[in-house]
Length: 319
Image (tube, rainbow, N blue to C red; front, side):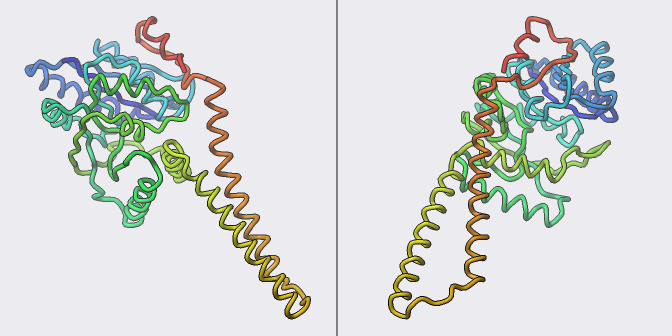
C-alpha cells in the first residue's frame, strides 16, 4: 500500500528537517509491513526559506513531492493542493510543526485495517488555558446546533483517509472550503482515537485571534442557512412586537388622550432596531459574498514552483 503524507507548511524552515527525519524513520518502520510512503509538502507562500529546504529535501529523497504557492492562499488551499497531489491508496494529513506526532500513523494503520475509511486523531486539551478550553467547548456546542454536520472538539485535520474519501472530498469544488466540515460531510465509516497535545518544536503559530474567529465563522456558515432563517424569525418577531406596541399606543390614546411620547423609549427602540438590521444585513452579506466568490470561479491557488510532473501539476490550476 502506498501511503501519502500531506503536510501544509507556512514559515516552517526551522522544523522541516526534524519533521522529515521523523517521517523517514516512520517509513523505515513501515516498509517491512508492506507500506511505501510518499511525502507531499505544500509551501503556502512562506516568507522564510521553507521552499529552499523543500528543494533540498527533494534532491536528497526521491519520495518528496512539493508544491509552492505564488503567495499565501491559506491552509484550506494548501490542504486541497496536497490532496490533489497525493497519489497514495491512503492519505494522512498532518501539520509540519510536529504538533501532530508522526508515530501515531502506525496507530492509524492498525485502525484502518479494521475497515474504517477515516481514522481521526483527537487531541486532548492538556496544557490549554481555562479560557481557551471553555471557549472551544462553547463554540462546538453552538456550531453543532447550527450545522448539518457534527464537529467534535479536539478533532482537526490530523487523520488518515482512504482513497475513496479523498476522491469524494476533491469532488467538492466549492471555493470557500472548511475542510473539517467537508471531511465530516462526506461520511464513510470513521473511528477516532485520542492523543496528548504536543507543543511546537520551533517557531510560533501563525493563527491570530482574528484568524481563529474567521475560521469559526466559516464553520458556522459553510454547512447551513440557519443564520438566514434566524434573521427571518427575528424580523417577524420584531414586526409582531411593533404591532402589539402600536396597538397599545392607539388604545392608550383613545382612553387617556394623547400624551407626550417618551424620548428615551424612542431612542432606545431606534438604536436597537438599527443594530438588529445591521446584524441581519451582515448575515445576508456573508452569504452573498460567498456566492460572489463561487461565481467568479477563480482557482483556489496558483503554483510558483513544484517538482510534480507537469501533467499532474496542470490539475492544480483547476478551481
